[in-house]
Length: 413
Image (cartoon, rainbow, N blue to C red; front, side, top):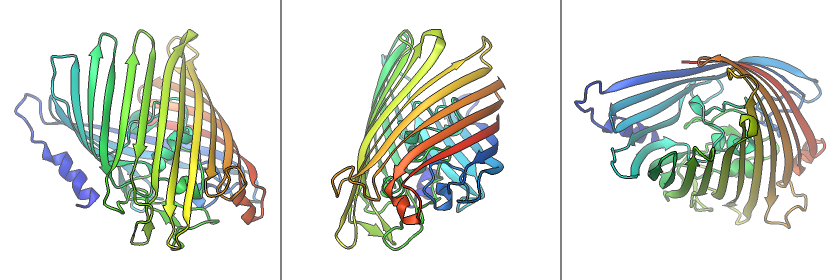
């Protein structure tokens, strides 16, 4: 079954019940207008090796640009007290289709009188990895650009399948264990191997593609990848553990992911990458109501080329974010995040300086003003320093620094 057919069949499969007020539909949306100043490093959206969403043209100096940063519509049908759905549509002129789907799934959560409560989700959705992207349309309430970890999740990781969770509840908190079988994510990992990490705020829609750097290409000289394709007809698996406690003011999230892709499989010129990772995240409120978020991810991705050569890289990233309001009315928020990331070519001694090897770090400072629940104005400074040997093939230094200043006006409804 084609993914789009499966998604809409899932959303419409649950019948409406006779309960008063059902079925019903909630409609939400987001519009983000952006003004950006960048340096002259070509960005990844322009087939460059830059580390930010908005890049420039080498030799032209700083660039001032702007436009639509995000336009999303979210439909949330409710079929009954225990069943509903979620459809996230994104509008963007640079997508393959101007209107595309980011997430689409149905949910079932039967009532429970015991401490345990179970839930089922089916469709296409983000795996539970991020404690950072908790705002509407998988956005962050802290900064404009996301951490390197969650920028990659937004780009290349999406699950089409079914997720099952069991939550044990107690006064003030609970523990959730769960997992999912999924399809359609066999190319995940390509970007980390062939381009490396980036920090941005762009999600890849389900039928969109991601450009590859001009210094590399897929095995048939393709200039892009389609990250949510099914190639080998083998399901992937992830498992999760989440714990939260209001009295402690903390939350912990652990995710183990493996797409179980056949490294040598190809379909219509697209190759599968066996990608697996472990991610752990923790949030906690420090004194003076300062919120701390931290996350660590480690994994590897592997592909067997048609020539028989094995392409294999490990990847690691982490971040620490501190955020807090500076006024009692919680209108003004300051956030500071530090990211660290690296990619190591496993075919040759790690750190030996092959074009795949990469190491870098980033500082993000953001100020947000939110006068009410519908409006948000943000100012962000992002500076990313990275070393990637592949840049030498373009005649520039392997080490570069990408600086971006962004302002954003966001309206949600």
